[in-house]
Image 1 (tube, helix red, strand yellow):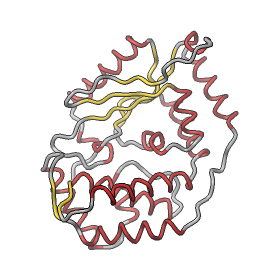
Image 2 (spheres, one colour; image 1 turned 60 degrees about the vertical axis):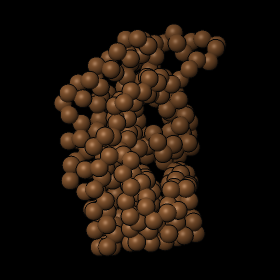
Image 3 (tube, rainbow, N blue to C red; image 1 turned 180 degrees about the vertical axis):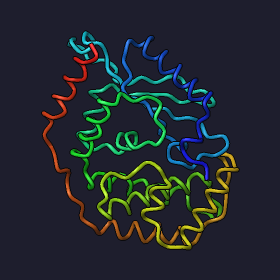
Length: 264
């Protein structure tokens, strides 16, 4: 199976790197971390999957020293192949304080385009401190139930929807096993949480088909996976999960001030 790292060519990495430099220059910001967040980062890209680049950035000091609130997101127009957007540092840290699953996934992406090592090490440590199994469970359970009810009404299912559902279901198993923040890589979730041979076989079959098909491909329902989905949702809804170990926002305030001053 193609690894997440192999799903981005040298030429595309160069193109993405140039785009990130253009963003820094045109918006007068410093990008601290950039990664792949979509199906390529998850590890189940189709032939025509696009690139979903996400980043965290910091402004110059003057940007923060004004009364008026400014836009804290940078989004570039999406073309047929490339989708790039980022969050300003204070926005990212507020989301981290609430154990935002999307941000946590970024930090665990196996495809990293740029990383300030010192910044990332501290950010990752803070994410672990503020991580909430309860909120993570709610997020992935909501995704599972929504996808199940909207996309699995017929005998034929869009293949990528199977993977969206499966990834959320396996993340719930990861949380249930108290293994901390769920990884982004689908292969790691499968290797750690799937013990049923029939489920694993169906997953391998779907991965093979998806790697050779396009994003609009439909396929037949998979009974072992369907059973796993229903059992997981029923089981997780009955379970209790702990709150985050840390709620001290001063840690994030101090980190924020340090990073802004360091980059000015």
